[in-house]
Image (cartoon, rainbow, N blue to C red):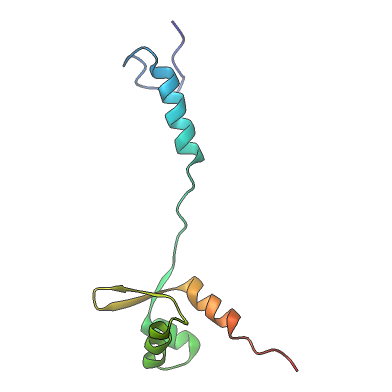
Length: 93
């Protein structure tokens, strides 16, 4: 009989459990972690861009800024605002 894994608390389940336990732990370790997304509402984006709230709604509707509707509320990812600003840069002449 093989020795149980040091961090395996369920070592008496079944024969062959050790290989299964190793595979599960390796899969959990290899799984990419979800990235944290900062969500802003239309008023916060409008204050940041110094435009009206209606302008933010128009940008979202036209697809210039990617947004998500949650019920009646509009939520905009901070990365989407950054991408919009990066694409809106005016080149020096």
